Image (cartoon, rainbow, N blue to C red):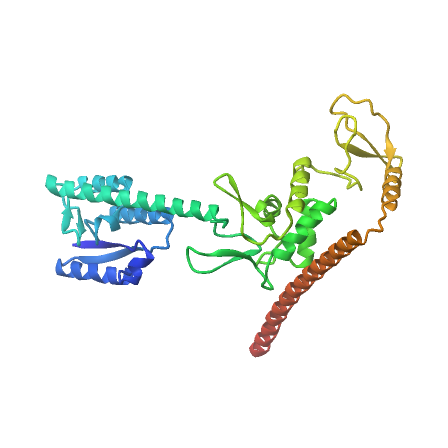
Length: 390
């Protein structure tokens, strides 16, 4: 009779102890040979497969058996065939449709079919119950471990742009990626551009693409990724896990103050709307009387600013952009200090900012040079191939 094999390894520990998929498959093939079964196909699930993929493969196995009118399914044990009641019901329904159909669970010394004795069915149901309990217990332990890790200040997730993990499994920590391909300098620059200029996320993406920040396929970073990065609190030293904010132990890429400025600006602006003009003070000035934002419009070649009057407000005067610019210039010109400590702090901040700017440009140049070198190598290869053909 024709049969299929269904193999599953549930953990890395089992693989380390010799219960690998090849060894399990060999064990089942030896059993099939003793029973004089012809193996037509083998379905195997490794420990690294996700729950969704495991479910998909189980459904494919059952569909294959039905489509080819096979009568025999051979598996090592109950918990290798199914680990939930839904799959068990599917097996029971398949068995009940025809008397010749059988499920051989070799190590459990159990052969199920339509007319199995009540004791055999009880054995099957009890083992399913234990398999389901094992899955539930494992899920509970994993959740407890992730909760404990987050409370210790380490993000339990699997990926953050601009960072990498170091250390052994279950004890990995997050550090800023310092490789030539790292996104960290671009991420820092994106925050600074959004906070200190009138750049929209779309304009930031274009600017960063020109500096060398791109996907592996050479295309610009998706706009949704730019929005996600600008909204991610992880980059200022915190993280969110299960809707709760934790203080992280990882080194931040940006300051918390910069992140707050960006967050406030994101909430204030709606970049999904088309904006024809990019005015100098757009989104930066608010009415002192009512608190509403100051909007700008162009009249007779000049830009005028006025209150939006979303609330009752008596301010109706329109002010030209040059006047506002002059007022700000005069105010900034009056700011002076002779305090040595303050001047030193300002100088140190400028030096730090300049150093970061140099590091960013060096990173961008390195990425562009690497891309250029790759393209040059491809051109050389094409040229050589063409010469050989001629």
